[in-house]
Length: 121
Length: 336
Image (cartoon, rainbow over all chains, first blue to last red; front, top):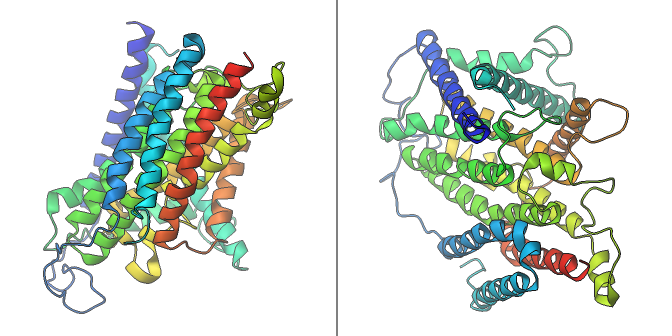
């Protein structure tokens, strides 16, 4: 096997070892722990009183716009990584191109900022 | 480079090392926290100054009952702690502790670390939503908003270092650092006025500041502990958890702190490099200093409000990060 595959195999084997550790701990825990079902104890915690209403309520997600922005910038970051280690070989052209790319994103952020979506709604 | 037959042994060694390091961090946390609050902390477990306390912290919850709320989505609720634990520990596969001493020497090391540690957000959403409790839902939403906002400063700080070192391999990034490390990206001759202006800006130091601030937010420790603010929403996404599942979340959080300390010392402070002492010792010293710094900040800073921390990320750190990336690119191209 080449080094390349050995290194990734090491990651996979470590993942399997961690999974075994987790499952093994759970198995040991199952042997040691008591098991007494109780209606009150197994209810949702809500400051000691019975839970009021539905548990899966519709929350007011004030920051959902941030999720959109995050996807845009995270994809940008994905393009940044290959560029970051090769731009010196590609010359000035690659830098100018990335300046244009980041400028577009920057204006997007500035626009969102101006529309006040970055503030508490 | 490890022989393929040694990989299982090596994996077990890494697992034990990670468990030990989280135990050491927990002990340091308990003791430093106590010192800051002017008390002595654990003193009995393990006879000498409570050194056995981390083991006691593990052995107590293993005897505790497994409480799954009646209304919870049981399969998702039960599997979430494992989903948190695996990526938090898997990060350590690529962290080199000395020249050539690394679990998996992959060229995409830095990228791998960022990608794997980002998975912890999924476990928190699973825990928060499957618990079917109002506290966990609020905590989970806060946690996700925070993790995605501070993911970008971490990534941009890491890209800055990748550009300065011109590689994504963690070992090669360490090799690329000479004494002032990567605070200033360029030490050769400067060309013209623009070359000097750009060359004198400490881009690496800016990246380090962003990286550290965002690290505190990623592990959800003070001053960014809104998602688990115990005085308002109990323990946030982990409110309904008990026994080993609860401890798994805490182990993954502590492993995350150790991993970020290790990455900060590899990226910005030359990893194992240093005079006289052997490389492994230098690396452990640097990681310990960062670990103590994390604990120190955690117990001396007040909590930021939710809108304040979003503002800090989106209005300061992310624009600054984009400018840093461009600044390093221009510096290196002008002074070529």
